[in-house]
Structure formats: structure tokens, C-alpha cells
Image 1 (spheres, rainbow, N blue to C red):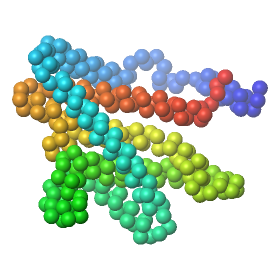
Image 2 (spheres, rainbow, N blue to C red; image 1 turned 45 degrees about the vertical axis):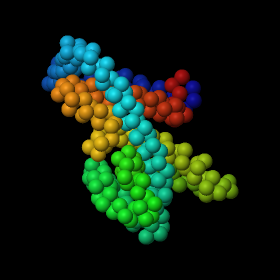
Image 3 (cartoon, rainbow, N blue to C red; image 1 turned 180 degrees about the vertical axis):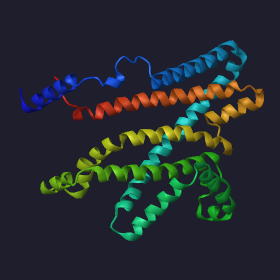
Image 4 (cartoon, one colour; image 1 turned 90 degrees about the vertical axis):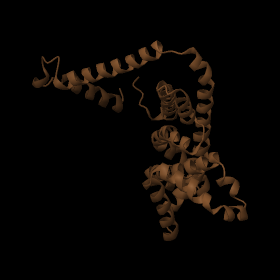
Length: 287
């Protein structure tokens, strides 16, 4: 038996020999357990009531009329979130490097960008681009950028990209700073260039640390994408609002909530699988 296995064996023996606290003996029900059970029962009853309502009020004509629109809006939401995350991720690299730069101007410039987009609501940023920048039409036409500000989809993509770039930059900066300096020093001792060291040594380790925060950012972007319906982008929420305005049936919002819930749950499961895959070398072998 090696030293590591012996240490684990001793620790397991100590945990098994630890007696149960006297205050917890003989108590099958405590206030905390009872409160938790009641809350779980309430949530189960709530979701059961929603399911029963949807089954009881099922309208085949409504589904045939709006199901395709829901699917189209859902695909629009996924497309918007996907491209904003990809472009924002690319944009976050120079911003993160600027935050870590020794140059005071670059550091303050990156800090100001992140501070603004993280400190103001996404809806306010969307309105600023849609209503504010649209007032300078002659200027944008002169510089050839009016195509970017005349279309609701382009404005939504630009707003989401700038917003998520600020959050991704902070996530990436924190993950890079979490990588031990000894990894960089070891790469330098092998004669690796700074570019190779970053992409082959630092970035892979940083992405493991940033994986969970990135997953949270993706989920927040999916849920936050509902605000683009205000500027006439027919995403999932946009089609939902349109269906409700035509039928005044509030189950339209229930169906939208189910779509968002399924999307977030599927994404969460996939992210867990990805995290287990990428961190499998960090798990201890209990064999």
C-alpha cells in the first residue's frame, strides 16, 4: 500500500469512527427537513397544476397556428445568442489583455469598458444603440455603417456582443491570473515563446477554471435575450408577445417559459458533460 492509499485509508477509518452528534440522534424530522419537504411539495403541486392546466386547456387550433412560430422564434434566439457569444469571446481577448497590461492607459481603457457594460442594464444598452445611435443617420451613412444601425437584428447582435464581451473578459482575466506562475516559468525554461506558452500552457488551464462561469454566462444570455422583442426582433419572446396580442391567452407565456426551461436544462446537462470530460484528469483514482 503506497503512502497516498494509506492516508486515504486512515482518513476513511477516522470518518467511520466519528460518532453521531447527540443532538442529531433519534430525530427523524427537524424543522429544516420539514420546511424543505413542504417547499418541495409546494413546487411539485405548482408544476403539476401547470401541466394539468395545459392538458385541460389544450387547443389544437392554437398549436397548429403558433407552434411553427414558436420554433422559428426559438431558433432565432439560439442564433442570436450563439453569434453574440462567439464574437464577444473574440473581442474579450484584447480586453482581458488590456486589463492585465502594464500600460496604464490600456488598463484604464479596458477597465472603463468593462465597468460600463457590467454596471448598466442590458436593456439600457440596447435602447442606447437602437434609439440613440439611430439619430445620427447622416454620419453613419457617410462612414458606411448605417447598415449596422438600421436593422433591429444587427442592433441586438451588437448590443449582446458588447455586453457579453465585458463579462467574458473578466472571466478570462480571473482564470488566467489563477494559473500558477510556475507553469509560465516552466514553459520559459523549455524555451517556448510567449505565444506558444499562452495557447499551449496558460489558456488550456485557464479554460478549465473559467468553464463554469462561462456556462453561467451562456445561460444568462439565453434568458436575457428576451429583451430584444422590445425592438421588434421576433425571437421566442417576440413571437410569444405576438401570439398573446392576437389571442389574449396567457398560456402563450407558459409555453415560452417551457421552451426557455428546456433550453437551459439541456445546456446545463451538456455543460456538465463537457466539464467532466475536460477535468477527468483532475479526479482522484479511488481504485
